[in-house]
Image: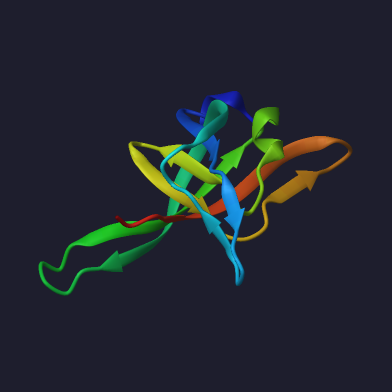
Length: 111
């Protein structure tokens, strides 16, 4: 992948998870920074607010050939552009004769 396309910077963060009786809960107050690297973040879903008819991006796709993002899990988060984004689903690792690039679908964490 052409490095000139990777103009964004994002940080892969992992929050501690605790197992309760019924589910795993994530504590969003104490993140562990896993990796910071170059990527390209592209919006692919925008919702329209009914009040002001404004659109806001609620989902992004991160594409990177930076090897540090290859450790991403579906339970991790991305800190990008001052907002916290949850990885939505399994990371897509494209490996054509070796590591090529990774794609992460992310949704905005409200709050």
